[in-house]
Length: 248
Image (spheres, rainbow, N blue to C red):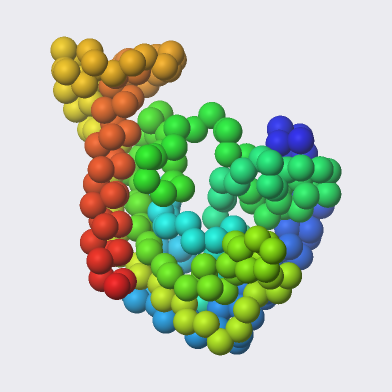
């Protein structure tokens, strides 16, 4: 079902009313869990809110966070001040097909919630959940985030190795938002091509049959793509490690 109902994810589907209803319901649920049932503290929240509401036009924003429980997204976005009820400002997210697209009802619901299937034609970073497309010709902003507490609010193995039917209360959730990382993809593409030529990395790595990507007169073979993804993910991983250390 993952490749069906793409029409449900379009902004103008039924004038956007079903999408707004989904985000109102899910956003209200997230805010109730994060702010009413539990105590949530957020470091550097203003940075995230500013980038969501007023970053320069044409600049994409990707968030990378650790994964604590199945429901930490969308619960993560329920903290005070974040526009989680606004369907227009809400971001697209990747999700596993075997969880979110098992039947027609779930597929329709998650399409309305701006969820894409995980096996979309995007290469995933080795750290976190963000993805970057090498054909992008803009400078994306990547915002690293680390959180804790969701494993206690919605534990995966609470009773009989199952999650509780409802979120638990009186838990402490802590969210650390890092400094924005800007990646100049065009320059990084050129560097990846030059570095991967004759590099040990390209000659010793087993080929997986990645297609050659042509963009702006530059051809990225598998070795160049691997080098590019490695460069991006290493920088993000360093930022995540620093945040995780400050979370302790």
